[in-house]
Image (cartoon, rainbow, N blue to C red; front, side):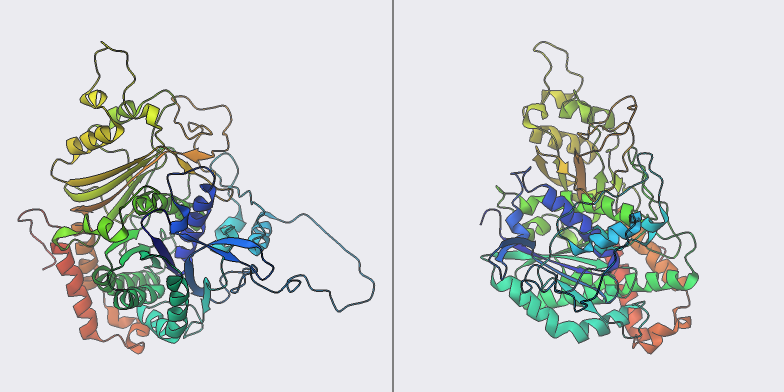
Length: 540
């Protein structure tokens, strides 16, 4: 196959499912529009019982039973002919009554995944937010057809959802044989398996499922890349103290194994905090999104993930997942932070040097990891999508006085490297520049401001009507930075200030105090890797 080899994706939890639903929609939107990305890296070919060819993600997604509405765990692609639309047993007269479905009902009915596109309101272009949107599940957004081995629905030990890390561990133990079977199914058909993408919820019990899954992959598939991303929604304003403590402890317990057993681990959230106190949400200049709405926030994270994972999915790349991770994680820094510019500010007539010139003192991206702006970046991988080759260098006429040294560069790669070296002179930076923008699928929210054109360009003046944006340029970076020191240190401080023993599920679910102290010490040790010079650490 083209590219560096196949990748198997694993998702655990509802919010990871939200991010994944958008992520797969973005992949499918690129099938016919982007030859730079090799879709065979993430997708597999198959044949149904009726002889029809299929093209489905190499995916295993775990979620709770009852959490995916009309999406069946075995799917529809490979069932017997007529099984889905069987003849009803009733032979009497039938009367039909119909009425127009409401927005939320139409979304739920879309869970059958026949390929019909959904037009979801977003609130970003004048359409008001609807009450149904807040109750949408990831299966309401997903339009990608899944293989019968992909969806794995599990039962909660307590019957009321997964609150704690240890409950997630219990679910993993109960599902271990099934998970191993599905991993073997997808891995054994690969020509060359380069590794795994693991997406897991951090804030609930699926953190335990994700941590143990990382350990399983590390033990069963040595020498393969394991890139783990922990997802966490922005907390709502009415979050109760018990939920906040659960999130804090779940994060602390998961960080150690996710970092140690993965090639790298990156938390993804539009919130600036993983702790009990909710942090400010990331503000993007041209996005009118509701950070508390999973449909919106997960779309932002999916765009970032789609951009950040491009290097090992490129058709011409010999850059494997393992090499990708090794270039970022020296010095024991296996936890990374993600940033993204959505959309990258590019005017219709600008070249890349023109677009970067206003940002010579501060990069145009915003953090999509729970941390603040870093003062030091140790290493980073930067991907910029949506800059055609003809616009990657300056097009000023010969003899024109150049506005900056960027305009003197002879290639787009030189422009990007020169820009990054001026901002992060001490960082080891790898760059990838793609000409094609990120194509947006039919279920992606239209939450862009009126300054963004249908082609994703940013105008100086707002348009009279907001167009439907079909694709946008995006810039993203994975960074090992000093900002993670503060993030991890605050987690340790909040744990020290909280009486975790008050919350019974952790004591009854076999979390020993010694094990928890060891987890806190692991997080504290990890924080030390990101200190600048002789910076003191108040959490010691």
